[in-house]
Image (cartoon, rainbow, N blue to C red; front, side):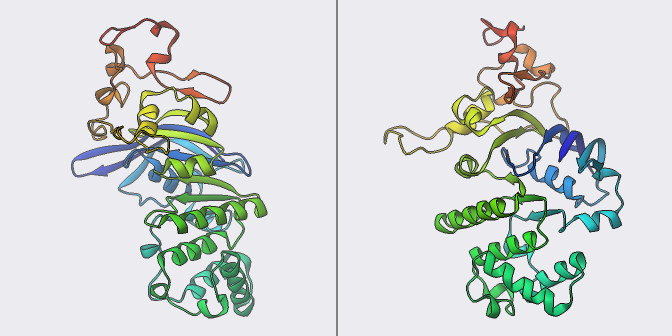
Amino acid sequence: MEVKDLAVSFQTYFGEVEAVRGVSFYVDRGETVALVGESGCGKSVTANSIMQLLPVPPAFYKRGQIFFEGEDLLQKSEKEMQKIRGNKISMIFQDPMTSLNPTMKVGKQIVEGIIKHQKLSKDEAKKKAIEMLDLVAVPQPEKRVNQYPHEFSGGMRQRVMIALAMVSNPELLIADEPTTALDVTVQAQILDLMKQIQRKYGTSIILITHDLGVVADMSDRVIVMYGGMLMEEGTSYEIFKNPKHPYTRKLLDSVPRLDMDRSESLHSIAGTPPDLYKPPKGCPFFERCDEAMVICKDHMPEKEYHTDTHYSLCWLNHPMAKGATEGSGI
C-alpha cells in the first residue's frame, strides 16, 4: 500500500480543522510499519482514511491518493469499499469494549463477516469462527462462540477483535492501539499473537500506538507524526539509535528506561500541540522546540535524507545549518 500527499480536513462550526496535511508513506508486503506521535497528531485519521471510515461530511479529502494493489481507494464507491473492508484490509480498533456489538454473541459477529466475504453456509461459517477463536487462544472456543462480549475479559475481547480482523486472511491489518488499557502480561500475549499471525499469513501491519516499547518490539520501520505531518521516518534501529528530529528525541527521552539512575527524573515535552484550526506556516514543532531558529517559524523544511531509509524534516539537518545558533536564520 502507498499513501501519496494525503490531506484530510474536518469542517466544523468554528472552521476547517486540517487534521492530516500532506502525508506520504508506503507499506511493503509482510512488513510492520509503526505510526507514532502524541494524541491528535493525525494517526487514527490517516488509518480511518485508508479504510474510508470517516463520515463525509464533516470530513473531506482535500488532496492525495491511497493506492492498494495499484488502485486508488479514494476513487472507490462505498459498495466497492465494502468488498475490501474486512476482506483485503482489516482493522483492530483501539477499544474492544465499544467495538463489539454488546447485543450480539461474539460468534455471530465473526460469522457475519465470513458469510459476507467468503460465501460459506452458516454451519461452515460457525465452524470457521470457532477455529479463529482457537487460533487467537480463546479457551473453550466451542463454548465461547455462543457468549456475549460482556462475558469476556478485556484481553479476551481484544483477542476476539483480532479474530474478527483476521478471519478473511487480509493482506493489510491496521492495528489502532491494540494494547490500550490492557495490563502488561496480556499486552505481551496480544503482541506475540499478532506476530504469529503475521508469520503464518504474511500479513502487512500498520501499528498505531503511543507505546514506544511496543514499537521497538514489533516494527520494521517507524513513522513519527506531529501536527498532522510526518516529521521523521526510518527503520526501527535508525529511529531508536540515531533520531534526527528534536521531537523524536524528546519522545524517546520521555520514556522510562531500565538503566536510568534513581535520581534522574523523567523528561516531558513542554507546551501543547499546534492548533490545527490555524496550523503554523513553518515547522509545527517550532513553539515547543528548544533548538528552534527564526526560519522554522515561517518555512517548512524539506526532507533531508540521512540514509536511504532514514529522513527527517528539520532545518537543523539542512547542510547550511551547521554552526547556526538559536535565533539565527539560515
